[in-house]
Length: 459
Image (tube, rainbow, N blue to C red; front, side, top):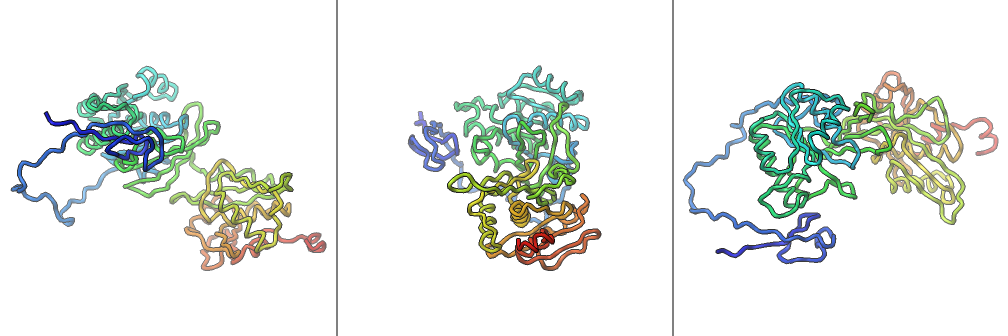
């Protein structure tokens, strides 16, 4: 009898070691190594092969056009690049309570109106899924439910039912009986996903797979899980807020970093057609320290209002608080305002946030943040119908931003009439007055013109 070979594998990152280690050398986690049995590799019977080569020239490959499946939601279709590709694997991750299962059950209802669809739940019974389906008014007779975690039974059901689309909720609950490791472990998740991928490609079944996330926000399981699937989506949103954001971070069939917006209601998720309106507060309620920017998420421009507050500090060192923006870039902007513009902020508390919980990490928001901080310091109002775009350099320069025309056209749709943008070749946008600036000080003068009283007092 041949000797059984074993190795130790980290359940957190999938790293392998010939012996047990207390701490993983790759990810640094403690007590994550478990013993795995290594199956012996099959030895080839002969070194020579008489079978003909199966590789073909790229010019001989037929160009079969895949007709994408309509998910029933324009926001989801946008993130996927136009719809669901037949035979593809889509991994959907998100925090607990974000609404992943609700979204996919509603998508299953839309898909079942076109073709047979299987909803497989490994965490709920069929009766529990039916209760949620009744609340969401999911009643399509072509939607089939199955509560199972055994992968062999799942694969058998997929081959017999042959649905066009199947939903697995979740991959961490599925296990392969021939493996001794527990469900959700690195080896189980890897092997189960690989087996599902083979069936999906062979039968042309589109699989939507739910994945759990870790406390750091990454999808639980080995990193190879994200490499196996075709598309990775993240469903974001605070359970105490009604709006949810669906982001694409990997897509073999479309653009990445696309964004879809949904609203959670009592009857389920509803897509938001004009998300820019969500991130704007009431422009008639004018307050100092606000500025409007346009952020681009993939090919979608979003108009976002930025609010800033500058006040005397009560502590030895001033506080810097950021919500929805990048913290280090905010500190850089404050330093530029003090060094290049002359606004004394080193002894003042500074707070900045984006309206509506939108996360903005691109440099195009720099100039808007700088003007919001300056407006709060001067207690001045920025014209509510002015949009501000530009990247701020350490020397106080205003640098160009990508997709400028796309951003400006989105601002015009929402009624903006003026834009402060980096100087250069400016597009012609009907109904929009463009003001080109090359330095932050020029932008401050254009956005915060001095009144007669300020000019007399020398402020």
